[in-house]
Amino acid sequence: MPSLTGKGEEAKRNLVCVQMKSIYDGALDMYKIKNSVYPSTEEGLAILTKTSEYFKDGKMPKDSWGEEFIYLNDEGKIELISLGADKKEGGKEGAKDIKLSECK
Image 1: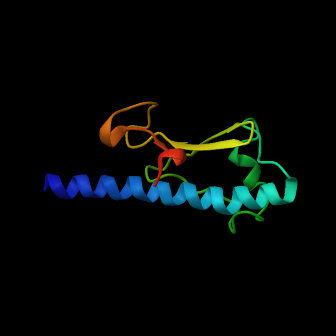
Image 2 (image 1 turned 180 degrees about the horizontal axis):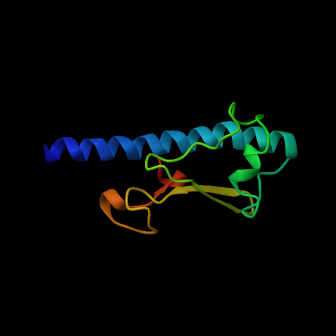
């Protein structure tokens, strides 16, 4: 049974990468095309939910553990982060933070 549990968590982590890539390649790129820049860190992903323009239901997807993604814009370099299963910054192995920049 432990090997199945590990596969479930691995699948959740993989799904988070798919979600983050979808947000980046979809909603964030559409926002940039319309506004010539990505949202600032202060504006965050919440700005994408002000209309149904970026998400059909106007709601931001959450990670596999029901938490919001962290959004950072460092002079146009975008990072999306999920805190992972432990919902805390940092962590190791299965509890490690998941970053868009590290997704394959």
